[in-house]
Amino acid sequence: MSSYIESINQAATASTGKTTAKNSDDAVMGKQDFLTLLVAQLQNQDPLNPDDPTEFTAQLAQFSSLEQLFTLNESMNNLVTSNANSDRMSTLSTIGKEVTYNSGNFHFSGDPVEIGYQLDSPASEVTLDLQLNGVTVTSLSGKDLSAGNHYLTWDGLTKDGKKASTGDYKIVLRAKAPSGESTAVAPLIKSEVTGVDLGGENGGTLITKAGEIAFNSIIGVFDPDSKADTSATTSETKKNESDDLGKVVNSVAEATNDVNEIIE
Image 1 (cartoon, rainbow, N blue to C red):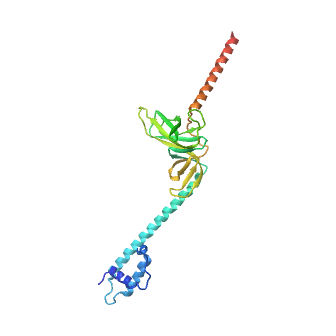
Image 2: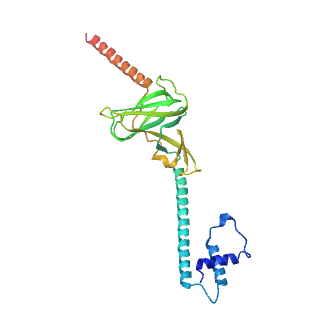
């Protein structure tokens, strides 16, 4: 007695004159193909030597299990697609918010920029060199040296106190541990989201004032009025602060002299 598979093959061969040949891309048998061949096999079996019903039942059960797996796979694909669409829609809620992400690159358009650094352990010194086309435009010093994420604002001035050129900048970080050795530090960018591109993968792309980033790369979302925990000053700003302090000291000295003259 021929096996169930052999009967299917014989039925398929017998029915080739009644059906249209398929392309090689459609060679995988689907549910409808199986049912068509099953009916053909039943119609063409030898009535004096029918197929073993036990084998027939086993093969039918295997196909049923396989069909369930295909259905489960399709459901999982639909779930993945649904989650991806949900992520894309979630990006819309970030418009008008400030987001933080790990990156050492940002676009400077002339307005102050919030940048930062991430310390895994306390440090004794953190320096941020801002480079344009490989040239250091200015260097900033981190104020908060504890472990964690810290932000500071670059006022857009060079180390000479001049307005920096617009363009794509790179952050080069240096950090020292209390022992004097170098310690791990990662750059951060904090910028306001002005738009969203829902195309592509990974939940879409956020368009910020500091450049474009993938939605799944952000590590924090803040209200626009959330201020950086500390501010960085350039050499020019420090010079201005020193001049102001000098003026105050001179004013106090002059007032002291006036008081002494009155007493005398």
